[in-house]
Image 1 (cartoon, rainbow, N blue to C red):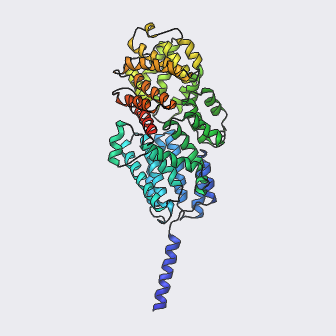
Image 2 (image 1 turned 180 degrees about the horizontal axis):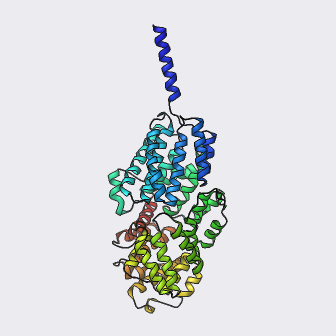
Image 3 (image 1 turned 90 degrees about the vertical axis):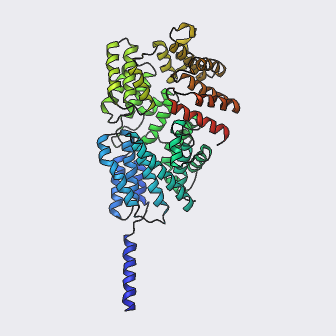
Length: 495
């Protein structure tokens, strides 16, 4: 009986071994991953399916499909796609939990999928559900780092979360405390930087993903705007054939007031229909044209965005910009019609949408001269903006709101022209006029002075103004401005 019993045990073990689900990042999976990270979503998912068919027990294809669905949902926000694809995140998590727990990909895949689901949930307004997924992802990555300290992808994902949590603004600090997440900008950025420059095989495989994340962290958290764009050049990122990198580079260039660079990236990208169709290109081109006061072209792109985008983010913001275009051209009836759409369409989740909704609800129209100066300055056309305001002072404006905005606009233009002393003087005027008002100009002025002193190496003064910014309450863009101020203090203290 013993030989028969032994044979049964061997057969059972053999069956279990054959049935155990594994994490095999084979050549087909590598190819699929790189296609997805270029936003060639269709071909990437086809390859993932092929890999799944070749080995039904391999769980990496599920990990890849999750990436594809994440980019599709996060970038396009289609409610139809959401209803179809969002529940599949949980199905994948259930399947991953059947995988080999001795693999570093077991916890890593669970954490990544939860993080992707959280980011999608935020886009669709399910903030509380997202918070718990963020927490679970954070804890899973923390555990995986202990179990597999040499598995480098941990550093990319955990480091990114660590840096972001370190800048949680006051308005959301309670949530981070409840979720038990601790952050450090210094440690988080160090982890991601080392990963981006590592020769580790896993780091090379995940480089395209890291190269999308790291410039945003440099720009938003460390305030190293030039470094963020320099990274694109230094690493020779393919911003023609990789749409994920093209989107990132164009977005950061636009945010950094480099209008012409952003336009060049968007117009020179590969136009093949292999790539994910995204309305964001029209959104960005709309701003590019608006910032140069090319009203007709700007309106065309913004209207295409409102017609084709399936989500709710920045819809109110775009209708506000359409109303501005009509307003600046004297087409007041059309401007009012666009303003009505601000009240009716989209959501008010983003700061830009909230501001657009508030302005429309209060029937607020900006001063035309100050609005033109703002737009030119935002596009990087600082001398043109300077000429519009040259020779004027706060005394040239009757309304207190216009006096405040003039001081702030003049300061930003001086700042961007490298005249920091003149900038500080005007920022101070804006602080004195606006520190007890709901407009964001005073708080942003304190933030900008803090950044000037930080760049000069005058750390104590920088911290003083960052704190002054944080101390201002009940103003527009409170959370986003506070996040920048908190990041500034953390940088100054080396935290």
